[in-house]
Length: 388
Ligand code: NIG
Ligand code: FE
Image: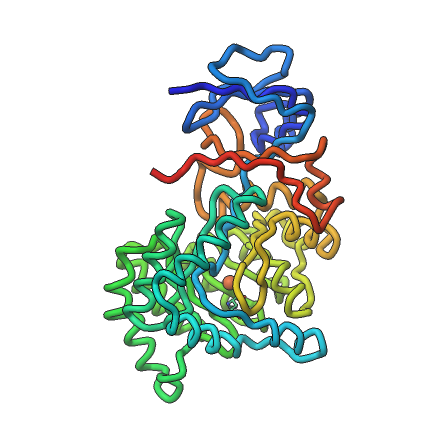
């Protein structure tokens, strides 16, 4: 196996507290690190750099762990810019437009879905993402959800079945019938193609009881639970996420003290999606209250055509810093280590010895430029171990 050394790294963020300055971000300055085709082998000061087969000169640029985008809806067709324009003029987001994307996704060919997903994955990767979670949820039929998961699996091992996104129009007068479909033949067909199950548990989507039923049945089929919660309203969805030991509960736009207490006593990550608040002109979630209460926080793009057509993690970091009072380091940690925790992955989101050799070289001396210079792509190059 070929070994490579990356030298002259002005600022290396490892997220390994046993390294460098021993902070949570395990930061080294004027650093070097060695990888092989799979993992990190050595990290240390550039002055102690060992030999390797190949050398990459970072030329005083910063290196960060590859971003872990733990929440996306990349498999879709069509676009909804008219809704965005209407929202900017004062219309509220209520998820009603999901049905339009369902119609265009159902009408798309397999090749069209693949092409669109590939393009969005490429945009994410070019911006430093190396691990991406991808949900289904825009077909809402047994065959359609299955094909969406198959497309997602071509790009990621972190695939989520979101058949319970909304009740589709043909079941508008028979929501119990849709929950029956979800928990029987759709689940049977989808479960071999997914690792996770998710439910949009919110006003206008699914109730806490419906979400519990779907996720419990999915768990029995070997899928691990996660949840969309409290994007549109306060509900009991956070408590359900904690009850089911969801890896992550996502959005958390509306939180009360009880929700925060529950999360801080749990292993459930709060994944914040500020691209959605940006695109729906909603209040941003209380990141500071979560962090100050000791809750693990992740940041992700939520890339989808309705509430957050965002493929830049740097933009998400900038929003988190500017609008949610997170420090740059907290935001960087949330979309690397935080994303890994939200996917219960120990091998990504950090650059300690043994981590997967996924990293981004920035065209900047410090990672703070991710928030400081919004609007461009300062990721010079993304290094990513490809799927087996
Ligand atoms: O995570 N909230 C539910 N699902 C997506 C939005 C879906 C859409 O509007 O198309 C989200 O924001
Ligand atoms: Fe989402």
